[in-house]
Length: 520
Image 1 (cartoon, helix red, strand yellow):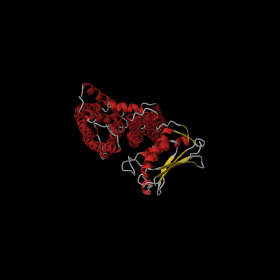
Image 2 (image 1 turned 90 degrees about the vertical axis):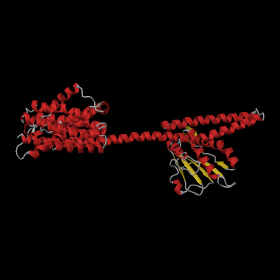
Image 3 (image 1 turned 135 degrees about the vertical axis):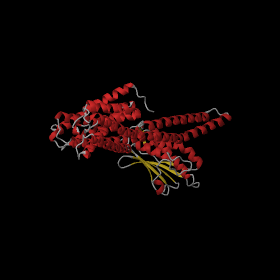
Image 4 (image 1 turned 30 degrees about the vertical axis):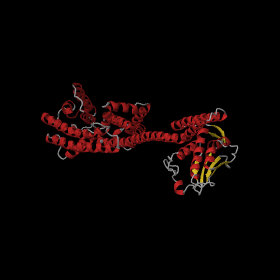
């Protein structure tokens, strides 16, 4: 949608255009509108991008006023008007080319769009330069044999002005751009970039007429600093500030004998380096933000799966105890058996609540509620949870005495790990014939003081192919498994500073190691 061109815009644009034309009218070739930096062209293109063809008349008026008030209309009335008209037409064609690709988005938000922008600008400015210099040649203002030089110098001035000034002006032209520019640049460190740029420029070009650009590479320091810290918005601001400082020094030193156009080409390359670095920094930040968002979604999904996995046992137990209470009531039992069943229901309910709370905290913040825990206390959850189930399925469950080792742990979460490993072992031995179903849980204190817990079973074991991917999400040897129990278990063990792995063998072996409190 093209904004309405109000009288306010009609007045301020020619005035601002004329101010920029006057301020940057340095080192003109043959006293004409051929200078090494034309930020007024960048202002006109931004104006055209916003208002389209409605900007043609104000731009023509601004060009004509500049020829008359700044340069004295040296080409005469006819060629002055003709030159302003040719420039308006050429800039309008370039503006339309840019408008098709850059009117609704950030201008240089990626390397591909920066390359496209540079290509369109370079082609449009070159064609416009040829047409305008042809008009000046017909007026007799260009000496014989100097046509190519005039085209080159005019193209360099426009290209430099657009490359250095247009990104910043485009950002300032929209409310969203101004807000992002303010967020990126409005910091104390930005004053440091500008101060460093001024110091470097003064050191390099304090005697600019004789410097011969020997130390220009020092100017890259503030530009690279700003681009790496603030992205493309910081780069746009600093390259404009550097260019402004260069023009000020050129005027101050009255360096008319130096090749200012060569200096401007160096500054154009400086701007490109800053933009490419800024874009790379912004793209990296965007990828990092997207990755964080993806990880949050993955964590949410993993938490849901983990809750479903861990709540299955207490909910099943609650259902079993509820049925037991129902049978006891039908039999008229009101004594210790009913009381014991109700107590077990309450215990399972409390355990389910703790599982939800601890897993929520773990996935949300990675926080652990650490406390000194004896190895024996940690191992005691196994017979409490699985003794009855093993008896029903004919599984021999052996829990070896644990050493008197103290670990700093979140007991609830480590119990989740142990229960998950034993539950997997139960599923594994279910395929074995009766009498050959065995599970052994043991704990040993290693030579370095760490605690190693082992869960072994008489099941089929883990193959080398499966072991390499067993701890990947959604990989499970069970037809009804979610493939997240071992992933969650490893995450919990590693959060405690330990490690969990499966050994390749003809029977199931899972081990995990925890640092002992005494060793720490």
